[in-house]
Amino acid sequence: MTKRYSRLGIVAAAVAAAVTWVAASGPAADDRPATPHDPESVRDVFLLLDRGPLHMRLRITIAGKSPEAVRREYLTRLFQALDVDKDGKLSREEFERSPLNTSRRGTKTRRLSPREAAETVVADKLAAALERVAGQTLAFRQDDTNRKTDDAVFEALDADHNGALSEDEILQATTLLLAKDQDDDDCVTLDEFKPPDLALMMPVAVVPGREQRPLAAVSNLLVDGAGRLFAPRLVRRYDQNRDGKLSLAESGLAPEQFRALDADGDGKLSAEELTAFPQQRPDVEAALELGPSAGSSPQVQVSAGPNVQAARPDFASFTFAGTVLELAVRPFDPLSAAVDDARQQFNRLDADQNGYLDRDELKQNVRFQRGLFELIDADSDDKIFWPEMERYVRSRAEVAATRCDIVLHDLGHGFFEALDLNHDGRLGLREIRVASDTLRGMRKPDQTLLRAKDPPRRLHLEVIRGSFQLFGTGGTGKSTVPRVAVQPRSPVGPIWFQRMDRNLDGDLTWKEFLGPRRVFEELDTDHDGLIDPKEAEKAR
Image (cartoon, rainbow, N blue to C red; front, side, top):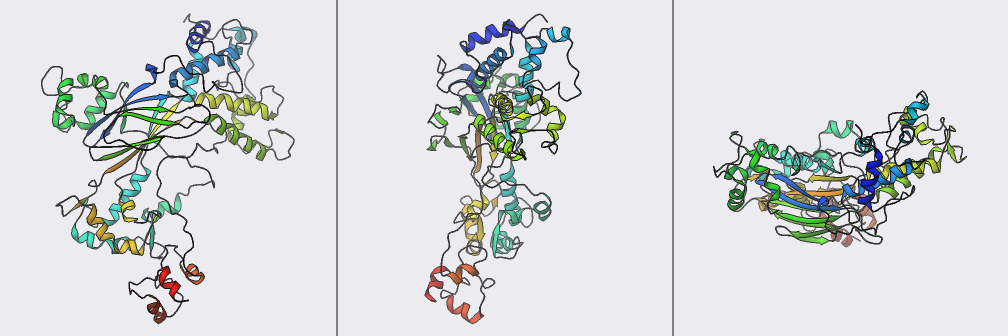
């Protein structure tokens, strides 16, 4: 291995146009590349829907540059910062000071001998360390939390568990929904559809005012067209007869698209033929800017797509094969978020307010006991001052920010949202009483059954820059994912009405009413079993 970092410095400097290192800042927001459409920024991504794949061509940029270009520029700046003697190469001693080096930590780490310190580090080592710390430039994730909750709503209504709601089950909807009213308040929230043991045994720590991170796993619906397993995954997903190839019916493709891929004309698509799929015209083509110039917001610009609807600059939606797909970018500055959170935690941990953290103040933090203290303590004085922590956090946050997370949120088929007529995050008694009519309206024309997959499926694809949180407590910006949550209601009706309305649904049931039955019936002038605010006002 004769390649040295002096070569990498020359190549990267040419690519980055001699970007200089600034320890406390990243690349300037307005430092745009000469070529506005960097080929590296384009990625063909496939969404494996039930009726066939959706081909998306996404151009993802950070301040006008591809994530790969941003990562190369970071490597160049880091190399220049570490190359203290400016000889155009890295010695082992210089490399050891890299924030990416996690191999030598702790108080018992052996000091390098003069010979070891002078060794030249091979070119690939710094880049390999970066990928080990930050991962690939594009990471595909999936969060099925909302779909699982929506599935639980359908399962509560599907009394015989056959995957379809009959007219008898629809007629029983009110009874079946009220059976989920665990606290007996004539109101059902999403939490009450979850198994009681999970709700009690798996509490989630929530910090007020902070966006919680989704528990996203590797995506099984999103496939990178440039990935080595792209074609085999397509065959595995749609090959119903397990012959190792896709017929026209199995593929879900349009006939002309199928013929263009069927190179040997045998009426079947092999894995080898499917490797040409990314070169075909995409169903959706969009540009996503994650690092806009100062004063601007992240943007989604769609140039092609089925039934495109754009509600705001950072959001667009499409309808494709019975699926509603939403495409969004999350407004988030990973560097400032990382530094702000670290500063807050530094101030909190500095119990004696002397301006630095010692080992006693960090003894409860396991990560600092495993060598992180020594890594941040640049001058080895056994104290961590804020400038030392800030330098470390900025360097690691800039590394993470060269990665983009593409997270697919499966929102399900919208049963709870349909039943929640006023969209306040709970099913009140009025909504529960008309649940049968609501469910009938969700059936397909001329159908007597309502199947779990009959309503359109809703998917939300959110792209966000990678983040680093030293203490694991920082936020990652405001999510664009629509969330079904109980909404606070403004008080309505007279004071006595507000005090009795324990479930805050804007109605009084007999269970909530704190008076004689005769008075309740007198106030309930329309005899619907509920006292609404207007009826309560008349009682004054």
